[in-house]
Image (cartoon, rainbow over all chains, first blue to last red; front, side):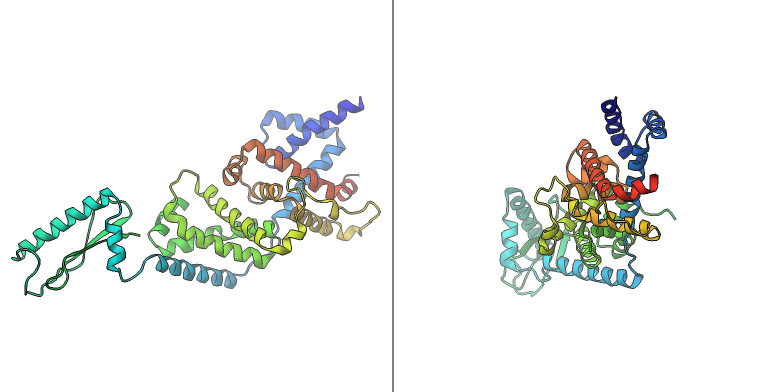
Length: 169
Length: 192
């Protein structure tokens, strides 16, 4: 007899755990309530677990000024992290490495070179700029290269156009 | 004007919208703090974790693909940040139990001979519970905090921790059993 009662209580302990979390279905909840009515030990268990939940939810309050300081630091650190990932002045050597990374990107670079060529033709130049000293503005072109922006720049006289890819925002 | 959803805020954060970042912080800072505080047991350390976690969130927002809910994704970052911080801080090592699966509450169990004044009973009980939570093994404490303190469902908690909902229920049950031991004297006194 004693062993059977202990077994019942053990069975209901898991139901009490779900009950405290509000995740016990109606039928099982009714069974549990019937058991609780006649079982002081399980009522004590329920009370203990409710107390534990209440106590654990209590945390110190943090004032608004402190939260604001924390947010300011988060903003600052986020901006610094972003700046560290995006150099402001592209370096030709590293950019060229990016251009030649992978066949798809290589093909893309070739098509942009072609575009630059035609652009220069349209300006009356045959081949690279001769003595005009003209230079193209840096432009950004949408391409099928996820995460990359493509920039094209025709530099000073006698120099080759520069193309680079930069991981975008 | 409709309030932006968390998912919309994350998309805006990914576009470097600082107002969205601030709004997300205002909405969730308290939840992050509760989790960090209960996992670390120390206000200053918990606030450091909140800061670190939100820096990660700002950075990772662009990578949020929506496979998990924002809530699961958010609590995963906060929980992992808190647990990493806890592991780094040697002063917590002394509180760890040798076996993470076995919460170490014996040290804080009130002795049977103690008889606290009735007026202080509830306050003392709450304090004992908090001490007991701090001494739970990491796995049990994390589940307890996410479900009981933050109100995450078993499934959400499973998603945060990468375990099954059944494991969540089991860990929660045993966490409660150990906590109950620390409260036995108080609760039995109340119920008699």
